[in-house]
Image (cartoon, rainbow, N blue to C red):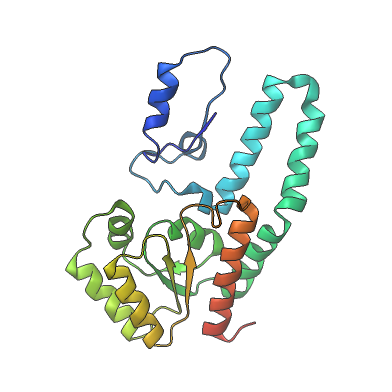
Length: 218
């Protein structure tokens, strides 16, 4: 069983505890990557964490079924080198071309991805967390972001299209009016039938296109 942890799915440990068994292997992502409750729970947006989870899933399967160790190794290699080929390529391309580019975002799901891409997040973390947690951002944070957009201190604005609050929508509109490229991410698979890699590739392509437009680097 795979649990996100970091406070994102607090029901999961309760469910596991209510159904004890010696035959269950539980992988808690937060524990694996060293992020505790209170940290950013959106680890599937961290490329480094994605590969850590792949390694651990493989190791867990091999522990459960050691006779098929080589099969699980091959499956891992196929997924990383073929399934994630375009995902890995886009991450490398963006880091190589656009590292250090300042961006703005609507909430904290963008932070691990920005770090993985080598982009500089200028949006106050307190604003990112407030939107992610459904609380009211401060007037000071909103003023800071307004200034960043007005003076084009950010090159690209990335927002979660599944959580476009009035504050976020106002920032999206202001960014577009200022000529700042805007692109989107989502918290869950979009469409719901997409694979992880197809979902992430689509978003990375959007980010790359926005960065190219903003910087003139293609």
